[in-house]
Length: 189
Image: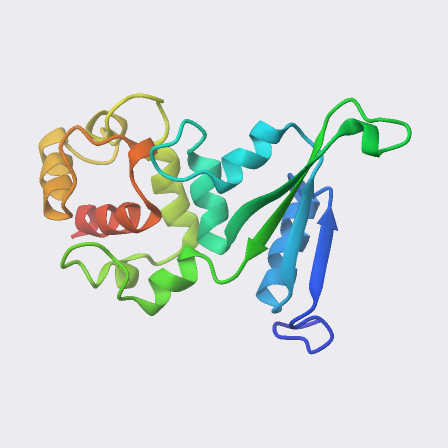
């Protein structure tokens, strides 16, 4: 099958076992081909909640950003263990992934904060950007200035934060995908 395959485009695809590994990759590929993807996470509710978490919430982290780059996730339904025979050891959650996600919006441009409209041009690959995001989240409750020390000098990070309208004491768990993109671009200038 190829991107935009007419057998898949516009159809609803329920992907089970999609909380990690092969299931995640299948869900992404079906999404790229134009399917409306719903994923079933056979894990606790908190794991599914992390996928759809918003900046500023306790659950928001690297997994939230990585998922939201490719889709707009929404926790749809918590499925009790008793719904299955025999009941599994963990609960299940249904999460829907709507397209496009933040990555496509960054590619089209116009959604970045401040005056840094060229940020999407500076993001050469999703992998490089996600590595930057991973570094931003590397130490919970630490500021971006501290977490980005291996990438840039603290004063350079403070300057970049100011250039994109963020406070010098900003933390990764407080900022959106678009703020991450703007900061990534500012640090690459």
